Length: 432
Image (tube, rainbow, N blue to C red; front, side, top):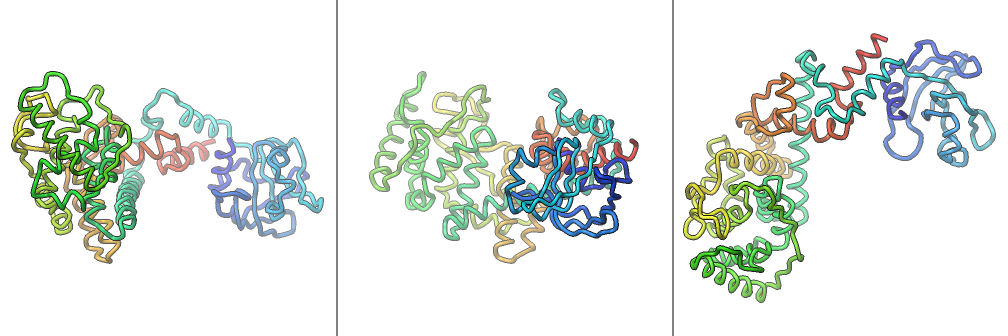
């Protein structure tokens, strides 16, 4: 409730419009101040006229006036700068450390406004609390919000790439390797792939790129997939795993490779094409071919060139296998078209943006955005929640924005911080 009151104060949605302190002095809010998300009073640098005096200072908001003491503000010097205490229930008077009483007002929210807010944030059933409203929103509001959310998500992904580049001392090849490995986990096993890449440095694997079996042995061994022979293994499968084990012993002896007892692989209810084994083989092949993606990626200018980065065909043992025992892969192509689209979204575009920002080549940042606009939209449950509500999703930039909206605002019910929720609640306040 306190968050709702902060929202009402910040956006001047209080009721009634003519406010007075609890002791009858007229209050005119010239500037509600800046919302403070850290410790200290809720709003900084407000400007308020109380009676015939002008005040400049901070504002504190509580549901009950007695929360002032309950939260220990009466002994905290940081709250001596409070010029107005805003409450819903006037059950106490509050004072500064010197005993001076702080002006206090009661700011009740309109009943229908408060009810609309709680219906949105406390709805345990609705996937999209504003589903009945969102399609009636004027297009300009939704378009602006999608644009902002798309950039927000791209910035977050680019920041992850930059953090790795800094962590590895400016080694962008190693950073791209880790980001690519994570992306090959395709959500279900992304964390496991990322930890595997961090524990198996690219520079060590590249020293043995002329031997793909050695690279595979290191990756499969670090993944924990060589600990026991699976049932139903063919003779060539058993021979292949023995070779991998030999190579893994060699690599651990040479480089002291270490791995945790478990990387947390998730295998339950996975379709064969989502097994991590074939994707590890794909990563090993890219390394054996010189891991040129790290260089080529920065020169990608369109979707066709981006897709060419992942035009890989597996040979030998992995040409028609999803894992060590399943011999039913439909062909030698390592990745499906939809998988390549996902990799462009999660690897190519963020790397272009991160590298362009780091080096000042801002045309790369523009290229990253253009790529997302050129790709088809993703089709998953997060996006379908919006398309089912009548929202058009023409490209990957929009689907990324909708995913950002669902994960960062809808799921945690941060409707107050969403422009759609803000518009909805503002209309409710106006109609009170």
